Amino acid sequence: MKTTLLSLAVILLLASSVRVQAQDNAKTIKSFYAKADFALTADPNADAWKGIKGVWAERGPLGDLTPGHKTEIRTRWTDKNLYVLFVCAYEKLYLKPAPTTKAETNKLWEWDVAEVFLGTDFNDIKHYTEFQVSPQGEWVDLDIDRKPNPPNHNWEWNAAGFEVKARINEKAKIWYGEMRIPLAQVDARPAKAGNEMRVNFYRLQGPPPDRNYISWQPTGAKNYHVPEAFGRLRLEK
Image 1: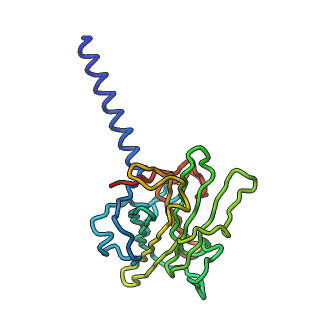
Image 2: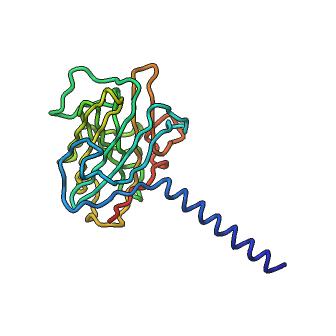
Image 3: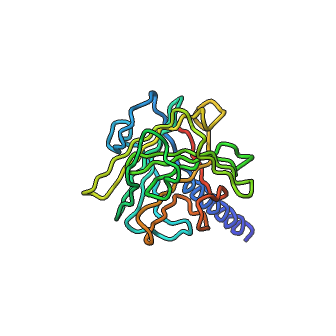
């Protein structure tokens, strides 16, 4: 009887460990190493992105499914840069008139965008950076501090060397956005395999009043700025 109870306890412990591991995997995106930096193409079939496994974002901030807007996210890194590729299904685009790609666009989030929230300070999770790209190749980067009241969302902060590329496939109803984020602008550590960052990915899509909100890790609130809900990004070789 004791042996049976011990065996049952071991089985339950192993099952619990498997569940915890599965939950951790669901909250982690692997960024795969590239030996050299590469040109931005916003093309998932480009050599740099072939065979790179990503994650999917398909739920709103409250965890509700967003049909027709499932989003694939892939990421790579080099010694100097972090790359992020978004593959964004859509039903209807909502684009800013007279776009500019020569300077950042404040309040870009009022239109269609894909976003990366990235934090490397695990002791101060309310301080992080935000990067956005639109289907038209517009961009904005922000330094976020949620501790003050009101919070500080500094769009005038600039990550020197941040670049984006975007393109739209109207026939397939997919738009593609790619980012190159200089690691030195967001992380004081030398880039190396095993480094982890706190991360979440979001989209805002479509015209009001039928605006769609898509997140990788749902925040549990009608707000993307919930750092407690962020997942992890791990540099892999």
